Amino acid sequence: MEKIKLTIDNTVVEVDKGTTVYAAAKQIGINIPVLCYMRLEHMGIENKPAGCRVCVVEIEGRKNLAPSCSTECMEGMVVKTHTVRVINARKTVLELILSDHPKDCLICSKNGQCDLQTLAQTLGIREVHSVENAEVSTYRKDYSPALNRDMDKCVMCRRCEMICNKVQTVGALNAINRGFTAVVAPAFEQDLVDSPCTFCGQCVAVCPTAALTEFDDTKNVMQALADPTKTVIVQTAPAVRVALGEEFGMTPGTIVTGKLVTALRRLGFDKVFDTDFAADLTIMEEGTELLDRITRFIGGDKSVKLPILTSCCPAWVNFFEVYYPTMLDIPSTCRSPQQMFGAVAKTYYADKLGVKREDMVVVSVMPCLAKKYECDRDEFKVNGNPDVDYSISTRELANLIRAFNINFASLPDEDFDAPLGESTGAAVIFGTTGGVIEAAVRTAYEVFTGKTLAKVDFTELRGLEGIRQATIDFNGTPINIGIAHQLGNARKLLDGIRNGMYNFHAIEIMACPGGCIGGAGQPLHHGNSGIIKARHEAIYREDAGKTLRKSHENPYIQKLYSEFLGKPMGENAHHLLHTHYFDKQKI
Image (cartoon, rainbow, N blue to C red; front, side, top):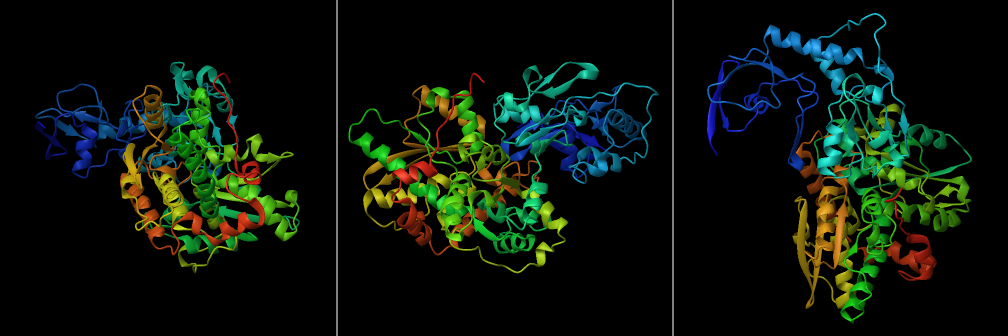
């Protein structure tokens, strides 16, 4: 790679040709403020529209200030990043943005985590000069079960558009109009629920303000906890335990399972359970479904639909319902672990407690915002009563813990309640890309071959590459597996299947970067690949520390089948734990 030298603030720096001024300055520890710019390390993509002009710098020999995020370094270039002219320009730009921005910072959901607010503080802006009777833009608010859009707070950074179109390839958000009325919105200014939006929420994770936020369910949860007529139980997903600590100053990748349980009890939940229990249950159903299809295919049944696609990720389900409606018979019919848990809780467990379905409130703590939308799907309700009443994100749980004045870091470790809190290591790894299919293989191998696995770690299925392939030897029978995370990679994989490029028996797909560990409801990581990697590694540490590491060995799962469900994929299990899909392309 060709190298060039330039001078930034009187310091000579050598960089690769094509490096931007912003990146070069960062290389020598000079921080240039940005608003629209964002680098997503774990996705290998940058958003640098140079639209906000907050990152402008002076370049010797140029009349106008230049946006550092999109200006490439040149040999001998002399750059000044913090002159009076530069600082005044940045302040003027920011004042113009603030003049058309709501002033409700005290009650804004992004208060304290807003990039615009932080910039105003950094640049010392204490008042905004406005023209008397000047027009202020206003837009219709857009609410959904998962995401909220308040375009009055949009600063046209276009980060959401970048991640929705370039990374996820969903195409739900695009810049429309020009000038004062310019805004990022669904096509034809539709509501999100009428757009192709999958509710993956990655737009929320990158939005610098509160233009895009999750639907906040904490108030509903607090009301349920305060209602003495309700039995309120909670389930928590595997990815939450390796990220929640970040909200309280802990190192990324710190496992806080025991403190998480204690915190939930102190919030007032009647029982604290683990979604991992339902993940083990999912493997029993999905693994049986996989083996059934493979066995029939090997036996010559040409009607068998392969590859089987995992169905645990609701954003992924929404994606293939919109974009691949001709392939709806390929995905597994299994519900996600969240919904399996809700169905079992409001039947089997409610009966054990002697509680009516409508008097039980099931809350989930998820790393995912699409889970909120999933709870609201009609097929997961009985006479209008949802299997899972409310799903809150990892960030929402952290807000509740702070509101209740709980010192999280000092909490003792406690265990989940039985029976819906017992799980295996196979369930834990559901929280990262490759984990669902590895968990399925651990069980499917032993059922298919009748032999005990000598090694349960299928490292060939692990990693953070966007698309991966592996072949697992089932005692002489090769099983071809594909894995993808991020919906753009899922599209490549599915298009490859339709075009005959791939010959897989099973495929795991997760919508978010890294899988659930990179879910849009997790503590904000601002594209830091080190944080994603730390969470990924923590998931496998938790798995390795489990006594039982195969789903079919969970004694409470075995008891559930013997007492209530019958056999995997049997009539009762299929009615309670499986679902069907819809063609949403026309919608």
